[in-house]
Structures are given as structure tokens and as C-alpha cells.
Amino acid sequence: MLRLPRFRIATPRTYREAAQLLRDNGAGELDRTRGTPTLRVMLVAGGTDLFPNMKRRQFSPEVLVSLARVRDAARIHENSKLEISAGTTLTEVAGDQRVRDRYTALAQAAELVSTPQLRNMGTIGGNVCLDTRCNWYDQSLFWRTAEGFCMKTNPEVVCRVATSSPRCLAVASADTVPALLVLGASAHLQNAEGEREVALSDLYREDGIRAWAMRQDEVLTEITLPRAEGWRSTYLKLRDRGSFDFPIAGVGAAVRWDGGTVREARIAVTALGSRPLLVEAAREALVGTRLDDRAIGAAADAVHKAARPMDNTSGTISQRKVASRVLTERALVSLRDPGAWGAAPPKR
Image 1 (cartoon, rainbow, N blue to C red):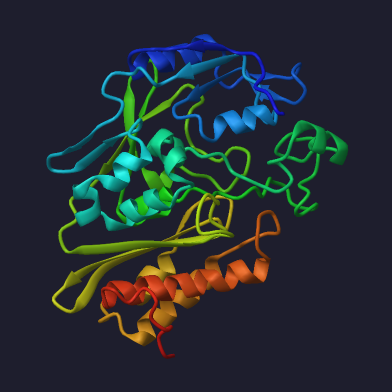
Image 2: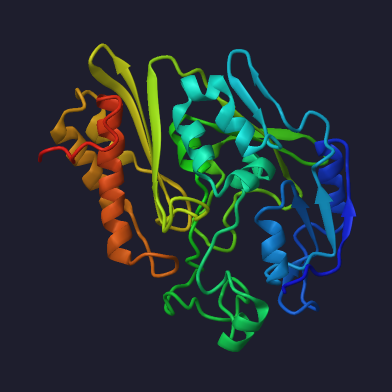
């Protein structure tokens, strides 16, 4: 049985207190005395990903700052925008009627994460900040020690997936992020001095180790979505089984209609690179069209070209590459023809 390492826990009542605790306990500092290099202090919300990682000694923090008692950490509020607090569970997000009616891709993505029990614990903030994954990394300490570690565990070791790569190629695997990207989401970040808002697309970097453009003492507090008049959206994923598993390819799609013409569009992918990606060429292929088969095919081609899967998760590279095209086609057909998720691919 894998057991958790020893740690101390702090329970702040506000996000600012949480950020101060991160700073006071050495946010960003590495402890190299606990088996493998690990952060001294980390945040925990639902813990559905962090605690298994700690059992495998991917992380062994001295201090965990729990967000479980932060005031107003779990709520969905609508005024001119939809505001989702970072501590809102995935079950709450998936079941909220406002999300289901107007931000369908997010409801679908949240409902496809893992299993009901884990969605009851896991939070939207935790999924947005999900650690990158790799077959060489998501293993026990015994396994990783026997194999000589990898770049994500020890930066002095080569990337085992591509030994000539100057960076870690661990894969971004969050389901909700591509849905949020196509819905135009922004993220609110808090540190001890104040807060800032950034486009969610600017939160990620093409680096399996340093995957987020956040300061180590910042806390994600809220996700904001703009009003969705005229937009329709969806999210599809490929995984090994029909439940529990992370995506090995995922596509979010959204289009804004004006009459029968696409006035704006967004396509985003996950599990096909070290960061979730908005595919600009796919948007260009769709805007101004009537979402005909030719436009859908061109957008799917653009996604297929942008997808960069590596041999670091389930499924073969070619399978995931093909899936990027097929999922894009199915997603766009369903937005054109509601209820047509299982429709045949469009004619080329």
C-alpha cells in the first residue's frame, strides 16, 4: 500500500491568507532532501490528483495549504458574466442549469472528468491547474528510481520520451480547460499584495515542468466566462474506458451564429501537447462559412496539423493524431446539426 508522506496542514479562511501562507513557507523553493526534488509548500483543494501524486512521492511537501475552508470558495454567480469560484466542485459545475444551457461545453467536460465520487471532491480550480502527466512520471518512487528518473522529476536527466528534447514533454490532460478556452474564459489570481485577471489562454506554457505562467505564491480564485449569446459549444474526448480515465485526446469547439453564418469560432485541444491549445487556423477555416462539410474538413485538417502527441500516455501517437481530426469533425457536425454527435464524418 502506498502511504502519504508526513506533512503539516494550514487552513486559511481567505485566498489572500492562503497566498501569504504560500509565501511564508517558501513558495517555489525545492526541498531536495525528501527522495526527489519537491516543492516545500503546495495548495490542496479537492486533493483528487495531488494525494495520489504524493503517495507516489511525485510531491512530498512539508506544508499543504488547504482551500477547503476559504469563504465563498464554492459558488456560481451570474451578472453580466458567469463567475465560478475555484473551489466549486466539478459535480456542481456540471449540474448547474445556467452552465448546461449556455456554456454546454463546460458542463460536458466537467461531467466527463473521472468518476462521480471524484467529481464530488474535485474542483474546477484543481482541474484548471492539473499537473501535466507522463508514463515516465506517474509511477511510484520505486519504479522511477529503478528507471533512473526523468526530466520532470530531475531536470538533470533527459526527457525519456524524446532524449534530444531541451524541455519536458509531459502532456496537459485537463478536460475543462479546452471547454473554458473556447468559451473565452479568464482566470483571477490572488497573491499577498493583490489580484490580477488574465485570459485563460495566457495561463499555460509549452513546458511539462513549468506548465503555468503563474507566480508560485499566486492562488487561482475564480474563473469568469463572458455572456454567451449566439454561441453554441461542445466538448468531446477519447479515453481508454468510458469512465475514470484522463483524455488521450480532447477537443472543445464553439461557434457564434449570425443567421446561418458563423461569425466567430474557437477550437481548442487537450492531451495532444504540453499545453492546451487554441487552434487559430481552425477558427480561420470556419469564420464566414455556413459550417458546411468543406469548412468542417478544413478546420479538422488544421487541428490535425496542430496536434503534437508524443509517446507518453495511453494510445499510440497515430491513434491520438487521427482522433484529433475525428473529434473535431464530430464536434462541429453536432454544432451544425444538434443531436448528430454520432453522425458520419462530413464528406470532403
